Structures are given as structure tokens and as C-alpha cells.
Image 1 (cartoon, rainbow, N blue to C red):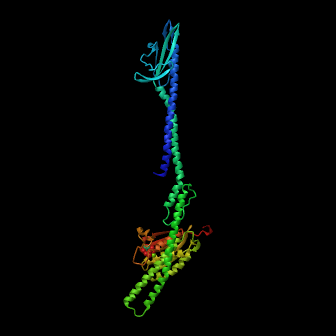
Image 2 (cartoon, helix red, strand yellow):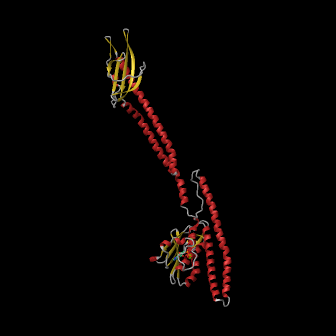
Image 3 (cartoon, rainbow, N blue to C red):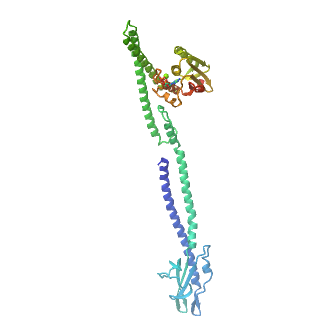
Length: 457
Ligand SMILES: Nc1ncnc2c1ncn2[C@@H]1O[C@H](COP(=O)(O)OP(=O)(O)O)[C@@H](O)[C@H]1O
Ligand SMILES: [Mg+2]
């Protein structure tokens, strides 16, 4: 069950019990009122009948006035019965079958009975009649069916019950609305945590959260801070290790070179030395890339804010790669527009473009074309490298950004180039996209970054 359901349950269950108890109490109050009204009417009727019993030529007679029964008139049309007896059991008027109460008393007695299968609420009222020394006991019994009483209870009770039920529904609705509204910051917090990039280790903002949730967010933030430290320490270790490896690798390379220059080497030894040099260069390339990746990872979007002329960076980088292009007989072109300024780090941006052009030169067949371009598009600067090589299959396009992923093993490589490209683009707040070239031939790698905004950035 969700927190919302739990809270609703805790609020609505007591409210429902309260409504049930209050409903029962209001039913009881309605019943008491209806009983009072009914008993009052029965007593009034019985007294009226009792008053008209009198002596007529020494004989007790009773002439029932219509007013004594009209008192019970109602839309429910209750059946009213009466019985007047003198001296114990001599019937003066009314229904002889109407029962007498089991207890006789000078006070009016109310009792329940049945007549012709109908349940009757009745009153027995006694009075004494005096005339010339004669005393006679008169008992008047008046009873009625219960339809008007039931109707009265309902008329008194139903509106109250309805009011209470409406209040219960309203309370449920308000609680639901209130919870939805109040849980919104919590849901936002959930989305904030769920939608994070794996290495996005910035603290969560707790400003608009409830006081009860702050300790949780603080604990998460402390955890993030520890992770941040840990990740930074790990990156630093990789950077340090790569840095430390560079010097011995350079020394190794020069030593192999010296060994290769020795006169009349054994052909087997010469081949071994050649392979050793290739391996040591690959290792040097790998350490350089590891160092670059560690640098790119620790660069956050706001730590580099120099104004970088992308066209300038690209032309410098292209002139360095021209040799490789010539070696492979690849036509390396450039289309660099001025006004392509971004906020960033020039050496990292140069590394980004170098990796893209290096890939294009590496994987495009000899005699192919590679074009590097940059231009401004609205608020963005676009850097593009297009080639007419084999391209990358759609299903592999997202995988090439993974570390150490290599699509082809014909050319040498480390599998870190595209990971570096993406890391640098992200650290500059940019994106990388890979698309097939015109006519589905080759690959177009596009990097988009926010253009330099002057001092407003
Ligand atoms: N321009 C390109 N044309 C064809 N395939 C490419 C291109 N750029 C990258 N790739 C593919 O993406 C893979 C990953 O590239 P990268 O991360 O630079 O690693 P590496 O170049 O060291 O293999 C490469 O192995 C290659 O298969
Ligand atoms: Mg590469």
C-alpha cells in the first residue's frame, strides 16, 4: 500500500466509525422524539375519551367524540383502536379484542400488543366515576399501528444521516486532495533521484520539502557527498597512475628505438623489437586516453568557462592530423565558420574533435573523404565530422559510447575514444549524436554546445 493509502486509511477509518456512532445516536434521538410525540397523542386521545364517559340515568355510557381520534390523522393512515370498559370487563365502546396491559395502574400505562396481526402501541388510562355514592372504574385503552411513528423517525433521522455521509465523502475528498498536494514535493524528490545520470553526484535541494523529510534528504546528500569523494579519489588514482605510467613508457619506447638501431640484428629479434614498440605505443595511447577520460570526468560544466574559438581549435587540430590523412590518402577538408564560440576548456574540446577526426581517418577506407566543420545555429554551436567510410550500424550507435567497446578490430584502438567524446561533451553541457551520412553512406558525428553568451553565462 502507498503512503497516501495508509494515511487515507488512518483518517477515514476513525471518521467512518465516528459517522456510524453518530448515525446510531441520531437514530436514537429521532426515535425518542417520535415516541414522545406518539405517547402524547395517545394520552391526549385517552383523556378525551375518558372525559366523555358519564352517567346517563344511572347507567355508565360512553359516546366517543370524533376529535378524540382525529388527533391521529396522518398521511400514513394508521389504524387506531380503542376500548372503553367499566367495572373490570363491561365493554362500553370500541374493539373488544384490543388487549389490556398486564399491569394495571392509576397512572397511564404504555404497552405493546398485537391486533389482527398488526403490532400496536397502546395506552391504558384509568379513572373513577362518582355519582350519588356509586363509584365505577373506567379503563380507556387507545392503540395505534406504527406507520406514522416510523415515518416520523425517518423524517427526523434521514437528513442527519445524509449530512454526516456528505461530510464523510467531503472529508475523504479533501484528505485525498490535500495528500496529493502535500506529497508533490516527495514525488518531485523521487523523480529527481530516479532521473539522475549514474555519475550525477550533485546534492538534492531540500528547500521546498517538509521538515519531516529534510533528515532523509540530508542523509541522502551525505551519502552523495561520500560517493562524490570516493569517485573523485578513484578518478584521481586513475589519472595519477596514467600520469606515472607515461614516463616509463616513453623511456621504454626510446630504449626499444635504440635497440632497433643496433647493427645487424637477428631478424627474429628485429621482429620482436618491432612488436614490442607497437605494444608500448598502444600502451602509451591507452594511458593517455585514460588520463584524458579521468580529466573529462572530473570536469563539470561550470568549472570551465573560458571563451573558446571552436574554429581556431579545430584548424590547429586538423593541421596536426593532416599527416595521418595524407598517409591514408584521405581528403581531409574543413568548413569552419567564424563566430563559433563556446564556454569551455580548449584542450578538452581539442581532444574531443581529435578523437572524432581520428576515428573518421582510421575507419574510412583509403581514398575516402573526411570533412570537419563548425558553425553557429541559433543559440548553439555545431561541430561536425562527416566521413564516407563504413559508418556504424543503428543498433551499435549507442554502444560505441561505452568504455572499451570496439566495433572493428582491423584498426588499432583502445575503445575509449567515443567515451571521451561523450564525457567531454557532457561536461560542457553539450550532446553528441551519430547519424548516417548522405545516402546512408558513412557517419556524421554532431556535437552541439551552447554558444558563448558573453558575461550572462
Ligand atoms: N567514423 C567511424 N566510422 C566507422 N566506425 C566508427 C567510426 N567512429 C567510431 N567507430 C566505431 O566505434 C568504435 C568505438 O570507437 P572508439 O570509442 O573511438 O574506439 P576505438 O576507435 O579505439 O576502437 C570503433 O571501434 C568503431 O567500430
Ligand atoms: Mg577511436
